[in-house]
Image 1 (cartoon, rainbow, N blue to C red):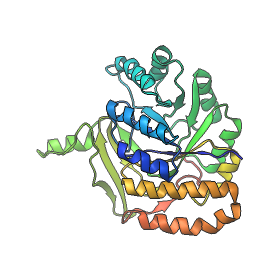
Image 2 (cartoon, rainbow, N blue to C red):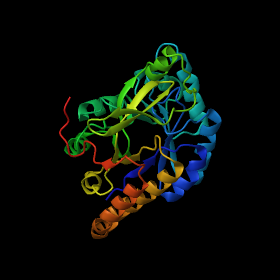
Image 3 (cartoon, one colour):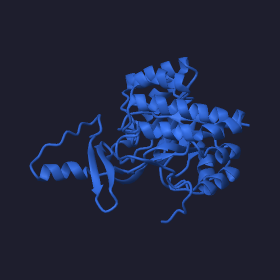
Image 4 (cartoon, rainbow, N blue to C red):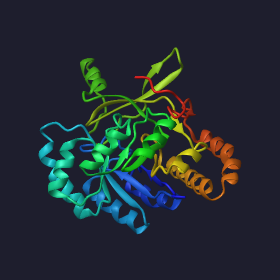
Length: 309
């Protein structure tokens, strides 16, 4: 039985070695100028160092270039791809065809992972981009498990899914919150290289708090709970899903290390000893619930829901 890759989004270069030792097989990093909703900001120097450290631990590094690109940024793509090729990146994550076209020119042998966040909802789309050059498709978070398994059965490319962490509910290219503060004559601490933390959209009726942050890509409103399916991996592993992603956005380094170690153990047991995996499910869930921030619970996202558009 094939073991799925355990993919983690680190918050900084200093996370690489601890996460690799905790069981991460691969990392997604990048800078917000080119990548969407990253757990941490990685300069070019950081990217080089992260690749060096990850490769030293036997892990891979994928660099995000899945931002929404307007005309002004398109001329930069070739240079950044050339840099990533020289730095030894193992793959580039893209959503915009502009990245694909630039990669053909500047990094023709670079593996490409197609990720538009929302539109990978059927195997035809996955295979279309596979025939254009993508090696992997990242499925939309709004799919249920049956849909994911069906896509994997018919896919001609690798399939990646998110198994843990928060998901994005809304994005605008505009700095909605920053503009509102500015209109009121207030100053908001939004730097080009960090996310604004501690901001929430509060739904009093449901008792939910939706985290908000702004960065170079605009305003993002995130889910009130974290997806967690550490106790529901059997069918996905049996179906041959290629990569399980832990999204570390707005999480601490310590949280990520502990959660990664638990998923590493869960994946390994699910493959080698299904009975032992069943026996430890409740323990993992209890430990993760203890790690969760106050008023932020875990759930199974859309894995067992019908998708409604």
